[in-house]
Amino acid sequence: MLLPFSLLYLAGIWVRNKLFDKKVLKSAEFGLPLICVGNLSVGGTGKSPMVEYLVTLLKDRFKVATLSRGYKRKTKGYALAGEKTTALEIGDEPMQFHTKFPEVPVAVGEERLVAIPQLLHDRPETEAIILDDAFQHRSVKAGLNILLTDYNNLFTRDFYLPTGDLRDLKSSYRRTEIIVVTKCPRTLDVAEKQKLTKEINPQPGQHLFFTTIEYSRAYHILTRTEKRMDKEAEVLLVTGIANPRPLKKLLEENSYAYHMLQYADHHIFTIDDLRDITKEFEKIKNKNKVILTTEKDAVRLLKFSEELSQLPVYVVPVSHRFLFNEGEQFDTLVTDFINNFKKD
Image (tube, one colour):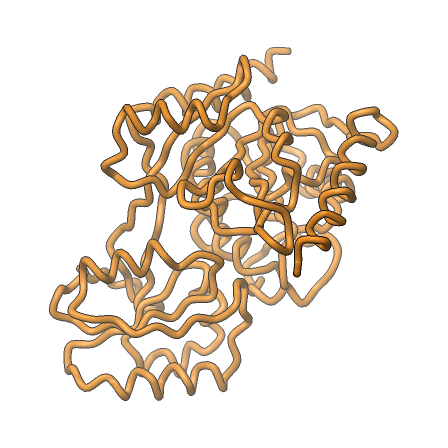
């Protein structure tokens, strides 16, 4: 029943892309390195961990900043994160970046074309900007595009909204310099790598990488005290993310049992939600029990710090790990892009 709407959506994005390809609609370029992290689908490919990976890689070598849309924030227009900024003002993912990397400028703005000059005005020393989730927004042309696609939902096998998850043309992958297949099993072998490479069909000059999810040790949401995963513990998993499947798998392998309260992606938690979480937690009879959430969810829960102080709420960090020992090659491509841009 949704297929006709998908075909209409496909027609709309095809026309829009053609207008950019024919330069009827213009893409602006800026005189500094822009690195775009994006995907062709709606969420769940690991953009935030990739932005964090890039920030970690670059922040000690270059004066780098991040620019996001600030999805589901309560404000509009351009904003630069400061000491008293909250997730409601800039969005959960930018707030996560700001919390983890307070020395890195974190800005938001729906219109990147307008926000980039404002960011450069506020932080004129900036040498490179990481554009979070901007691949389909072609009003700004990035010099290096990193396109992510989920191993469990490759863009090659997906369909267009609302039938599927695609929000951009499959053929748009040709516009990127780097493709990363994320959330691969750790056991991915060379034979399957070659099979997936043939399916994705990277174009001449494109680079294809494969990553798996790596979870670090969980830490308390308030005290940041670390905690090992306990196979005897019963866990209440609280998530408002697009794809919680990897987390569920983690708990299947590393806990006695788990229960789940799943909210919509970028859900803004209310005090009623916190009461529901507390009630569900109290239902668990096992004395060895904890509440587990993601870093993205944690920044939206922190406003209830007083209530959270009464609960064992732990946050599990997630990162990308490159398979086939190709992480160094990826790092070199990114750093060379900035170095060569500066020379030019």
